[in-house]
Length: 383
Image (cartoon, rainbow, N blue to C red):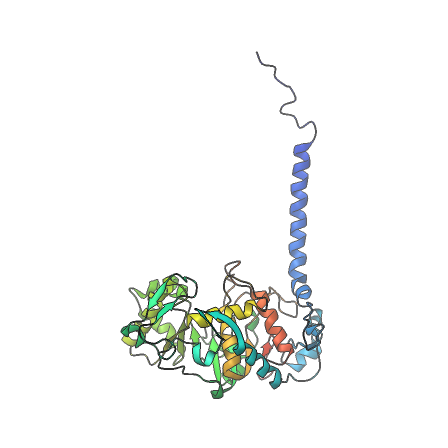
């Protein structure tokens, strides 16, 4: 007969009690951290000092949080995150040219040779000139995959890049951030010579005062086509009607990002042809996307993939004299300390760990402080 220890089920030493107390304390501390994190995240990170040849110890002192002078003078809460400088934003043409030269001249490994990065006027889109018939095109991500450019696909490409830097003085790149909500920036966006938009955002009457309607290029993520339009295998008219909202805007897709994107991206061209739409369909050149990613990686943007917005901003810096950014923000509060939704049209969060949005925004703000581009984060003064 075995001896039964009468203390076996007792917590004589208090281990279970101590464990329970520890778990409760940890949960309480975590909750307090989350509350404080939400309040101090922007304040802490936006005080990061950028060391550069500009001798900018802290670029927050040069950042205009709002475009409306009245809002600047009357909003005490905005000073929680930024110290304002008085006077209008002015483009620094010298700095702009230096950055464009830097983007063009950075040497990266391309295929088996060293090529220039990133040269949007020649390589932003896949064209008949940069991708001749018979080319074995390497995918951006699925590098082991090769797409053979046959006659049918070759005819879909434009003969050469349709956009050149000399065409545009002022360009607007419109992101989908919740910071656009109640911004009244629609008129200013519409006044741009060229407008890029990301991933089929809504521009219905409900949003036009804030985001405008003018669109020259709109990107489409193939995942949107897969999830919302069933890969265009059956009902294609709903997708066609969505594109009609953007009138004659060109449609831009990453058909050669990976092997899954190709077929569904090519179907977009077939759909528009079937409905006799005048809208052009273009495809990012995969090597351009690789080079842009390497360029920003060298500047500290580390992510599984850079965002579509960052790709468009990089292209705009080459194609346009002035670059204005709207709707680019990666934080739960605006610079005045008010909570905002993730998008201006919903509060659906992105897949965690895929993009490095805060890092991208910090780079944009740094470029803003140098006069290279303008980041709009407040109410537009024109409306």
